[in-house]
Image (cartoon, helix red, strand yellow):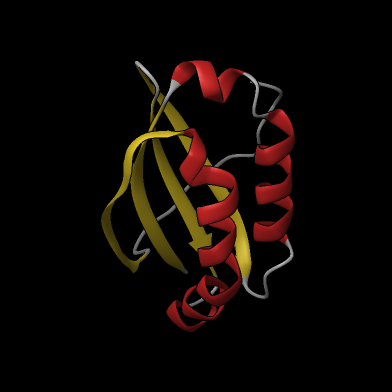
Length: 102
């Protein structure tokens, strides 16, 4: 499994009305071969830690060709500052439990 880690700093006012854009972006992500899911953590003040999980680094790279333009169209207008790539790498341990509605 491969992870891509980012900090996204959103404009809270723009984010509040962006449900349709977020759903469209999530659907594009989900449609990519090898995409396993996303974990998003609200850090407050419009900042989100985002971890995208992929089957492999190759799947993540291939998904970028579709997702890159979608980021510019759907996500960039919502950001207060450019998305910050923290890093990418192989997941060496995971004990994620199923979401129970939280």
